[in-house]
Length: 187
Image (tube, one colour):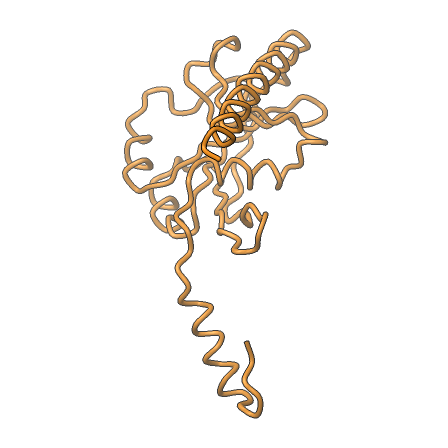
């Protein structure tokens, strides 16, 4: 809110107040949605929490598949301890089906992530967006090395991934419906 006749001095104070507003703590779900918006779910096949059915050696926080079948793994971390724990995992996020690996973290973990993620991994930072209905702004701050031994997902794998995605929709709809019923009971 501007004050009449105050000029540049008030503008500076207003910007200081905006900068000091506490940003909400980012959760994995916030980062998932921001990443999905970055890639665009109408163009890319984006599925969270992939493990069952595709026989990866580890659970992928997000699997993003390009229109031609190349797979990118997005590993989401929301704390420094989360990043440190990931270094101890024996699978190392390696697969012949993953062409690129990114870690996605809140912006305040940028320096720690650069220090701890594998050298071949890329890094996406996510900044909370204070606007209503916004999901966060993403920025690639480190480009990953491409796995030259990777292959595209085949038709059978894409169909299985589609089945997993469809199953998640119905689970989510059930949760939303239950929450809506509980809300009505409270009124």
